[in-house]
Image 1 (cartoon, one colour):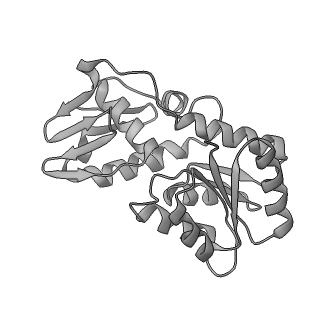
Image 2 (tube, helix red, strand yellow):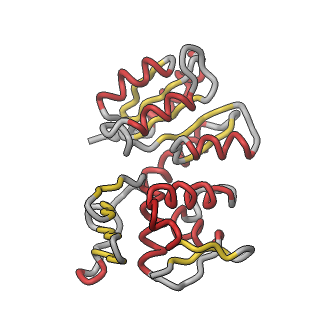
Length: 228
């Protein structure tokens, strides 16, 4: 079945341009004019949401926050499409749970390439060896097969990128990873993101680990490592 993409933007011309080009790429495209409409249509569980940052009624940041706070839609990748620029905006978008951030103007071909790259990131990886499926460190248990994390008696939800960073660090305790190494191994070469991306994700991982947050150590000017 074709992947379903929802395009959310209050500018009809932009919506039609994206819809036309993504449809030609084989995607099933649905559209919404604002954040409220997007939340309603997200109930159909599209495979990806392209979300404009600046919209009336409800802006993209609030829409993304609500999508990620809802267990039914939390795992849907979100790509921000915006005319705004600047590192602060990008970091805020990542804080809200966005998976990618694209600035206007963007050519239809480039946007289609970013969409394909985002879908590739969410494709199942190669099979994991049985002895590497579950990582256990103290109260922390990370299951790579079903991408679940248990902390003591609690189940803790980690979005895909946070999960991959945590699993990578915990799977090789003591190994130091620079920001560049984490970006390369978790994001790959398809998408260019800023170094602060890693800092944002590490902070959110630590918040969810609670009393176990200090297992992720910061080596100033070098990177991060996991303490077993």
